[in-house]
Image 1: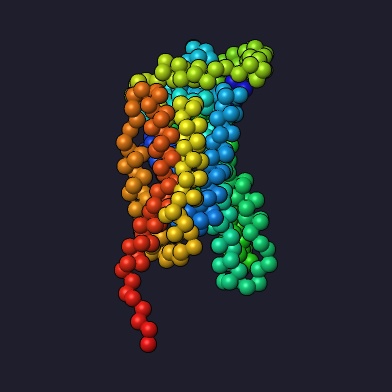
Image 2: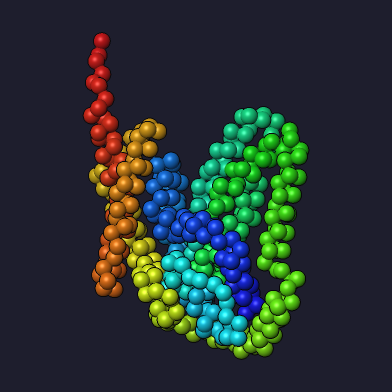
Length: 385
């Protein structure tokens, strides 16, 4: 296990030292993969494109985030910025990595919320897009008989590779929990279109396969450079220490499964080893996601039973009206997200609960009702002949 975790640190070192110009890209992808972005962007966009898909995205977000909190409490995965100090694995050869504002999350690191929650919540979007692309492909290439199921299975294989690089580079997680990524919902439609065109252009699959093989080989050569004797000796010493510590580590893991540590232990570790105190995020506390999910579930129930939703439930909104709804919802949700949080912990949980209670009410009921009402007033009256 120590060797596996150390491989994640090696990957972070290589990304930070050899690809420093991609730092802003990693931070941006990490922001897009954050579970909070599901409520801020993905849920409104999916809902205004398809109500069924939007509700599915919200429900999957709530369920998977609750399960992620339970698994974090049971597994208690370490985060890189405190593991490199607490484990003693880098006592003789310190790791050459630096922290980011996104690194100092206070919850346990395993399983990754970016991968587990966001990857699961974007699955309905991937399914809807791939089905739409499959329908368009069947219209363009009438000889096809295969359905979109193969695309979904192929997209699932890509779930584990999309966010591994950005998350390892920015260090919110070690390498072991990075098994999935939300970017696969963009890969699946492309695969379906590639299947359609493969019937008429055979070099496409071989070209894609060659590019994937070359990228995998280049990445493996980049992170496993064995030409330097100093690097080889350094990793050999770390491997020997890991092998000698393996029995005690295994016994410690088994005891953690029998008696999980208290949730606040990760908060003390994050406050201890984060470089700057202002980087310790209150909204990454273990119970912040619980207040977020509880508020969103309550807001969903209030919105579905509100008078505003009853008026727009069976109303037809055109494409222009849906775009206006999305822009207006983003304009309201964005400032709410940028307001910040009160410093008191109790007030923070109350504010977080109320804020996420308001979000489904805005997206499902208030914003569509406002757009539908003003659009109906602008229509000219119909004259009977």
